[in-house]
Image (cartoon, rainbow over all chains, first blue to last red; front, side, top):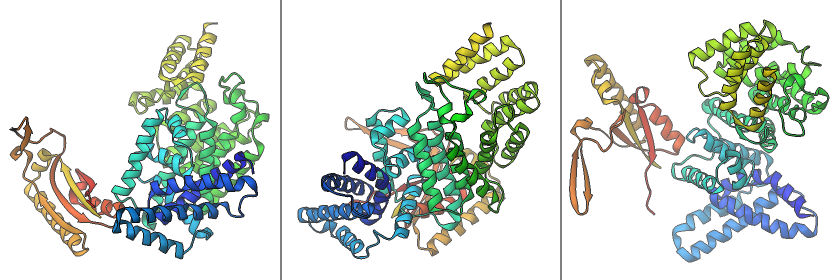
Amino acid sequence: MTPIEIERIFRDEAGRALATLIRLVGDFDLAEEVLQEAFAVACERWADGPAPGNPRAWLVQVGRNKAIDRVRRQIAFRGKQTELHHQMLLDSAAADSATDTGALDDDMLRLIFTCCHPSFAIDVQVALTLRTVCGLGSAEVARAFLVSEEAMAQRLLRAKQKIRLAGIPYEMPEREDLEPRLTGVLAVVYLVFTEGYVATSGEELMRTDLAQEAIRLGRLLDALMPDHGEIKGLLALMLLHDARRASRETAGGDIVLLENQDRLRWDCDQIAEGLALVETALRLPGRPQPYAVQAAIAALHARAPDFAATDWPQIAGLYEVLLRISPSPVIELNHAAAVSMVDGPARALALVDALQARGGLKGYELLPAVRADLLRRLGLKEAAREAYLAAQSATRLEPLRRLYARRLKELER
Amino acid sequence: MQYLLMIYQNEAEYGKMDAEAGKKMTEEYGAFTQSIIQSGNFKAADRLQPTHTATTVRVRDGKILTTDGPFAETREQLGGYYLIEAKDLNAALSIAARIPSARTGSIEVRPIWVYN
């Protein structure tokens, strides 16, 4: 195998192999280190022939042996202290569950729920998940947060220390805690996705790698917990949004708005997959979940042959459902935008102004942009100009800034 | 593992409680303490006198300096603690959430440093 093929296998298997190794060796850092060593061995051994039939079990086996070697060396060096730990490793070697698929799935869920434990700040949850579940390097995680690699390594180190010192259990939440904890996990996945879909700042509109990681996490969760409509809803939402990727920017990196997108460039397969998931999610018993409703909105966009033929009344109606089941200023803003397509920009402007007056969306940079658009459509040039200027100074994303600059130029005509 | 559950609340607000509410609070604390003694989680607990009774000590250049009051002025003050034994952080957090003052103040949960 070529080094690239080995790298790809490792990338696919690292998260799950790590999840099992953490359970077996009982320590995040040790598990990470021995998995890296196992990867180094794989690079040597697999180079001359085919990969083993079950590369994950292979990586776990080699990693565990490395851990046992290490602990043995420590015993020789430090005496009895570590003997207990050693015994634990040997026990786990005896009760071999490294190839049992059910146990491996449970390990992955343990890892996800541990990384997304509510005792971590949300950005720490995201960083830990990207690093350990998705297997991104510290440098890649640092880039996602726009911080230095050193700062990110420090943050991750502290988080892993907290797992050990504060006794954050490596387990699935109990039944009564499962729903709120799952909501937390999905929030992390969605945060990774939204950052990939529209970056907070920088030169690039999208960070495709982050969006892809989020979708991968969504697929993984759906496979591990197939009865949860919220997971299907979120996965559908991400697939449907991401399906438009190719049409969302010009070759030069400028934003192409939904109304001007070339719908032939949308990814039909991904849309089909998303639509099927929305239907399943909405058919499951229980009241509709927020992600599923948002996915239903995305589905209406995906189904529309062109912008004018979009079913705006139904979209506005679904936003009203969202306002009832999970109200937020962002949903209010999106609702207003949909209302503008049904009842015209004047009514939408009243909604946005009311929202702004309540101060509900302080610091949310898209409010002036939505206002500006409504004012422009109402022909209120001067007010629109002011709002675009406000939008321009609020954003830290270059493609958005260029979009507002284009609008300002058009207003001068 | 052992955890220290530190109970922070606004002293001034707490002091304004009327006699009946105060009695109810004492009863709730009693019931909570009994329940964690029975479950085997209890190690120790105390209520502290208010911060105006505090004296803060520092030694600088070999000299003892004392100041009147707590070391930092904060919106909520340390008013008491429980030292508990719990299986893991989840267990500690769910015990912390049952402390009556959690409904009005905040409980900081800190693992105890283990020397080995």
